[in-house]
Amino acid sequence: MQPTPRRIRPHRRTAALTSVALLTLAVSTSAGSGHPVAGSTSAAGPVAPVRTSSLGPCMISGATGVQMSEGIPTAAGYARSTGTVRALNLMVDFSDAPGQGSALDRFGEFFPQTTDWFRTSSYGRLDYRPQAPIGSWLRMPKPFKEYGIERGAPFDPGYRELVQDIVSTADPKVDFQDYELLNVLITPNAGPSALDTVLSVTFAGNTEAPVADGVPVANASFVYSRQDDGSGSYAETGYRVLPHENGHVFGLPDLYTQDGGGAVGHWDIMSEDWGADNDLLGWHKWKLGWLDDSQVDCAAGAGTTEHLLTPLAEPGTGGKLVFVPVDARTGYAVELRTRAGNDEAVCKTGVLIYKVDADVDTGHGPVSVVDSTKDSGGCTRSPNVHAELSDAVFSPGQYFKDLRTGIRITVAGTDPEGNHRVYVTRA
Image (cartoon, rainbow, N blue to C red):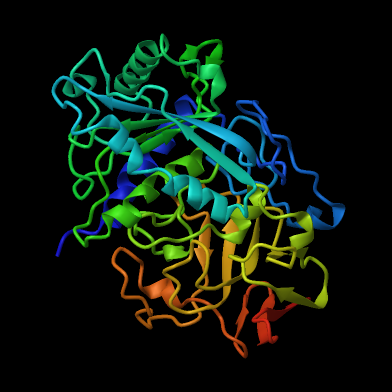
């Protein structure tokens, strides 16, 4: 059996973003405006969504210095997550790792799949437009080995030099002012296989980024080798490393930990991006401006409140998320997950409950899913999916209770349309 990537990825990206944050990140993120703005050209600093006062208690926030906090709202510095967003794609090779095949074939490994994934997840609110103005391999002035990049390392001298060389080489042919983010699609033969070490990494909100055409190249995702696990599914699933990396560009943290996907499983692409398709958590959709405030219930008051959840994957105006704040930094999110949209790997449908902690750094478990069927072994047989949490959702008649706070979340039943009724009780 080939090694599972989730045992490798945490070690490299957690370390990478920890070091990058200290050196180069504005450690706050940006939520979108909630609706597309046709023709918008702003490169960064999204319009902060207008939050209703009733949702105030649910807008948890982390302490200063938390790396990619799950808090809402988030400050400017990352790429916009709504409206028209143009992604510059540069296919890069080296003298000691010449590009394999056509550079546009490398581009085709990620598009239009990535565009379609974002359109589906955002309910059409993110108009992601990839462009490749240089249709050939962009050769770097130094061999790959001379940059000293062995893993998804921090923005160290090797990466500084590589990014500067990419900008200098591309600048005569590219107007960087035309783009909101950069994808560097490196030839897969540069560096080790992803099965051994995953190099792919994102530098977002980078305050030390080189400037090109008067704008800092501050939000850039690097993709190296192919995420091919040998199962024969690469053509359908290999692109998913890019939506994950771009999630960082939009301000989302890594949800896996040193134990891989053990905290969130396959319920969010920021946890597991190998194998079968999966969506984002409802909390992230609200954070990115893909859910309206009217679709979020804030269960902050004492007593019992009733809430109707419609499937998260389905577009529409129904309720998509219930949040139960515990304090100013933490709370429980409740949503209905079904096998639809980007959630093709869902093997048990139902109400997903998870705790969000805005005070926890990226890669250290800012989100943890509550498992309704502990030690069951899960229900999935899909490769590269954390099986134990695959059946974590709650069904009608089940409930979760936080013994410390007394908060109780009960799934009461369904209606003919498949919506789920949930009751939240708190002292």
